[in-house]
Image (cartoon, rainbow, N blue to C red; front, side, top):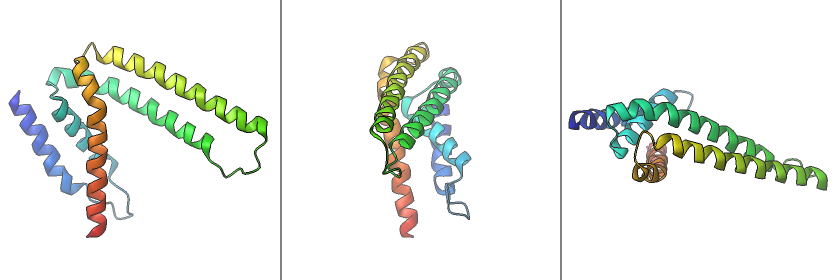
Length: 146
């Protein structure tokens, strides 16, 4: 078990510097995804059999969540300064509908995950996601300074 943790940690540390920016200025999505997998797997202390079941569930949920957040963001754009009251009301209603669906999706996600990992690990997952995002943000700031 420790062997897998050490390998995941070494992988994460090794690809940290290789998360260098692509020539056009964006991050290499594959390397970023590999770092995220290693980071979360290590921090949640997932056993190989857990990780094998965890990641498909997590990826489906995360993709759905990202899609919903983009959809809500598009609804909130204020480029259309001349919105009618009816259109504004419609956008707000759609936003609430998306938020309600996100809650339903998250409840299903937690239920599905509870068959794979403990509830304590599920609770820690949100904090680990934020920690990874902070880590990437800090790395990007350091890269921008150099």
